[in-house]
Structure formats: structure tokens, C-alpha cells
Length: 251
Image 1 (cartoon, rainbow, N blue to C red):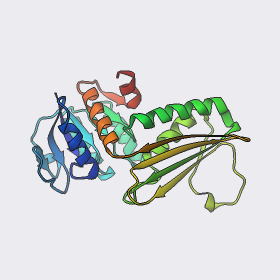
Image 2 (image 1 turned 180 degrees about the horizontal axis):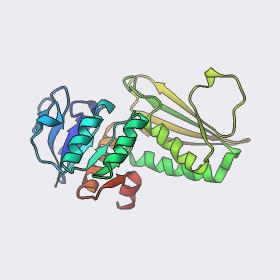
Image 3 (image 1 turned 90 degrees about the vertical axis):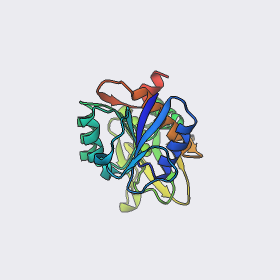
Image 4 (image 1 turned 60 degrees about the vertical axis):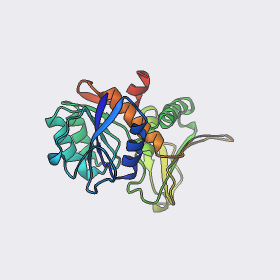
């Protein structure tokens, strides 16, 4: 049994985690952190980590970048692994996550979907096969309440491609200048509207042929299930950085 604390327990992803955990025997939610108190839950609730008294094995974070410092302080102090699913971190905050991983196990992923992580591997393979003879464009679509753009997942895909195309340059706004597209560019485009859960499309455009790899998330459940699987996987792990590739290799 893996006992978890949810950061962001009153949000939409918090609700998805609670629902997904209710159908599993290997997970138990024992605590939740949020500024707003969740309704009809059977775990300890607190607004801050300093108020929390429950004992847990892993923290699962679907909250806001502003919570990072207090969460990492609590996790390091209590030697508690943490699954970080929040996106939109600054470079300085990413450095703090890396620093914390020297003392605790940190599972860090911008997307917890199995399908998305397969797309990342496929995109990386395609980049290796096509080289710079194909132009790369990434289009991501999310609901109108999402704060960060581009999505963490779009950046994960771009980062994977840039491992192969090491001279890659990310371009976010072609309206800002008038010039011919350079081969080293990876275009990244964001759409925000309605209640779109998550759509990601990677386009490899060559001469007379186009390869498109796409993924559509129909509900937040896929992310919740992935995060819970990561929590079970992370329990008892030694300090270090972990991601979906580690989980998939050990599945």
C-alpha cells in the first residue's frame, strides 16, 4: 500500500486523482494540500505543508509553480519522494528540483500519459531518420483555463527532438519577423479554447510528403492513472531524478 499526499487536491486533477485512487487497492490518499478545502473526502486536509500531520510515502503534485518551494522543503525534511506533474516552472525552479533530487527521489514529467511518452519516442526516432531534410512543427491545444503556453508536453517533445537535432532553435511566434524558415527551427504553437483536455501534433514536413504523429487525451483520467503509477513506482526509491522512461522500462 502506497500512502500519498496530493498537492492541489481541490483542483480538477486533484479530483481525477481522488477518483482514480478510489478504484485501486495499492493506493491510499492520506492527505491533501490546497487553499480551497475539498468536499466529501476521507483524508486529512491542510492549506499548507506546515499544518499537515499525516504520515505518507509519496507526494503527488498537480498544483502551481508557486507551491514548489514549500513542497520541496517538506519533502526533503521528511525524506519523502515526490511526483511532480505541474508545468510552467522557470529555469531557476527547475534547478531547485534538480537540487532536491540529490536528497530525495523525484519523478518529474510534464505529461503522465503513456501515449504521449510513446509519441515522444516516435518523434525522436523520426528526427533521427529524417535529419534536417524535414521541417518540424509542434501544435498543442488545451482548455481556456490553462495558464502556461506552450504546454510542458510540447516542450518535452521538442526537447526530445533536439537531442537528435542538436542545433535546434525553438520558434514560438513567426509573426514577430519576416524571413524564410531555417532548417534548424522547431515551430511550437499553442491553441487555447473551450474544455480541450489535451491535443498534441508533431508534423514532419518534407518534399512531397508529410508525416504527422498525434495524440488526443479524452479525459484527465489518463494523467491521474499515470501519476498514481509513478507514485507506486517511486516508493522506496533512492535519491535521484526519475521520469516516464524509467517507469515504462520497469512495467
